[in-house]
Length: 538
Image (cartoon, rainbow, N blue to C red; front, side, top):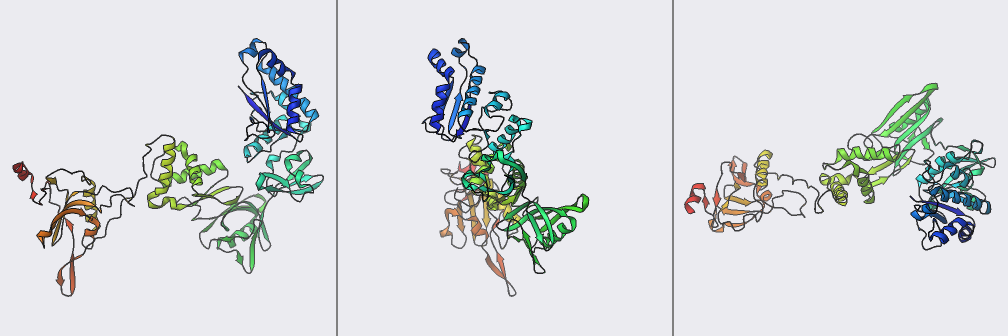
């Protein structure tokens, strides 16, 4: 068993590291007596310090070895020793201990709850600051409650969001999110360097959640959630006095943001709305209030939709899973849904939309074109990474569209292609002197005896195109021109052949299938043989 505890200080990390070594007498004794070190200390300037770690200094310890146990030292001895040392550090330096350190655990896997309280001074020295991690903020909030004494309760900064206001030194101040460092800071604070709220936690005495508004003339209601797609409002949840909610949403339902020279204004800025397809679900609440959901049905619906929504990431993944089930033909392991989602994001096929209090992504529906070829390719890629399918597996292709014959019905053309599917493919009959005829197509002046269907090519856009079948072409008009060669079946089926007139109307014929031409063979010279004739030749 082993764990890490990350911490930082306003002092020089090397000074703290040296002080730790100086006061860590038990650890020095373990090294002298047992030639083993129970605790390892590294600072951010050491080569061995994990560059992805949080803070300036890391303390780590591994499993208690047999030597320790034989000498009478237990893991609990080491943990108590370090608790006391951290208490001494707190007296000498300005310390902050990071909530995402694995040494902290509500189930007391390492330090006891009492020891964690002593190390963090009942949570006052706990920090939720870390790089791009919502999880660290969650842990901070949880441990803050766990470590704090009732009379010592500290404000939970994990609940603060952009544009909220907090009470500091008797003044309500707006909070802004600083993107480059992924932290929250008081807006227009006199000392911007120290204006980050995780450094002011002791001074925060109140919190007000930011509630955006939407207005039409004198009608105003609160916005609970919204989604904007490239400046177009496609989803809105609003609550307020019923008449006001109806007034605002009625304008938007008509596909307008301006009516009677009055503009619908929203706290999130200028926006447009789709001209049609806007729907509203209205619910009356107590005390004359109402809640409304306005959404663009073609974007957010059960079928043919492009926007997926969820209250959080897990709900969004559930929505994505349902979309995936409906949208593609390949079976896939459901436990890989999140990886397929991530792969689509990496391939820029999923776009995160601007939203409030709801998660929303827009799917690039080009992944569904050509029988979902791009989507299948991504699913296959994920399955290959998990060794679930052969590394050479390819996405399924759509069958080629049937050629349009001026002479045959679509069902007759379909029968020709069904026959080709069951035939030997290109090169399969190489070396066979008398070849079986799989398909006979005839016209008034030409007959096609096809022996091999087109095997296809990976570069083809479709499956079963049959543009390079192989067989004997019998020219009825000029027998000397009859020959073996490749046959483009769609080309011949689309030919219209003039066969005469009825009055002033041209009569058009074309190639058709001989449905009674079974068990026939052909020699290299073009002679047609039935089964009995083959036996005689043999």
